Length: 146
Image (cartoon, rainbow, N blue to C red; front, side, top):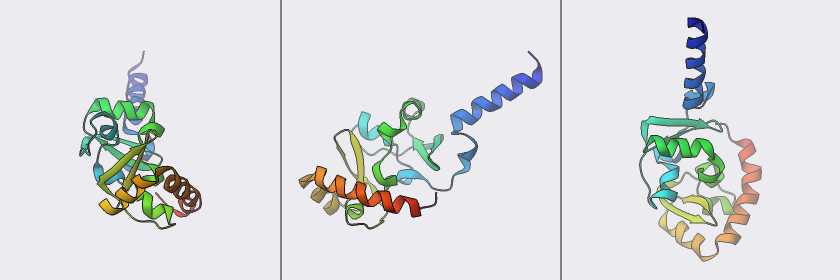
């Protein structure tokens, strides 16, 4: 194997681990919190810049390399719904940034909220609010830029 080929393979591997050429995405998901930790540790856990991955045009941070690798293997399982925007506000057709310390996993899906009030209300009828938010998200996500 030539030196050039070895260097190119190493570069390609680096791109994969970094999330590809779009690794310079500006938007940081969940204010830097680890999306996998909600599932594995049942708590909001800050990620670190050492373990980042860009998916769907957004940078995610993870507390550990293992969490990053779990996400890479199945991002749809771990990524928050509605691009990490507040699920209750989305159910009303409103885009509002969430606070990653307010969250619920319902039916195996992560939802984040702007406040404890929204989180509490969502828990009362999660299927109904999730369905309405999902419907609104289909319209709103087309207007977002990463």
